[in-house]
Length: 132
Ligand SMILES: [Zn+2]
Image (cartoon, rainbow, N blue to C red; front, side, top):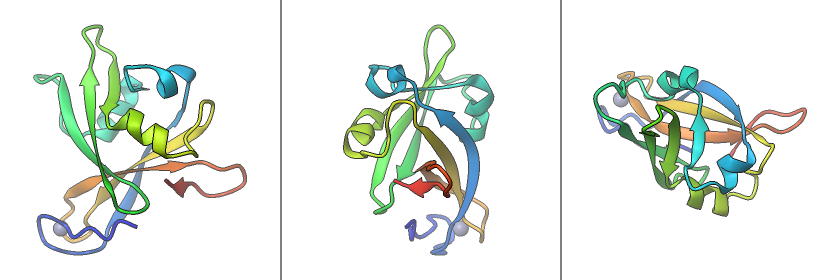
């Protein structure tokens, strides 16, 4: 996956950098807010601060290289949620389930070190995460 050419330098390789893991609650799967992102993990996902804007768009790629537009949103209560395409993503990706653990990765171009997007893996027992 992720044979996306870097928009900055055109290089067609990508490095995966694990950002954090998240165990998915019922609310994360079924709620209308999207998936809750603990404050400690927000900065690992987006290097852009949310200080002055309460949301930032993030582009996720799935295992088929399809882009998914997600949005990191700060609620009025100060909690962060990844929303936008998340609910549709959960509907389509059968491996993403309540109680399951997902790993968020930031994708980086090894040529110019630009962030080129994100991807999500599902942690399987006794195995490596599978990109979904
Ligand atoms: Zn590049």
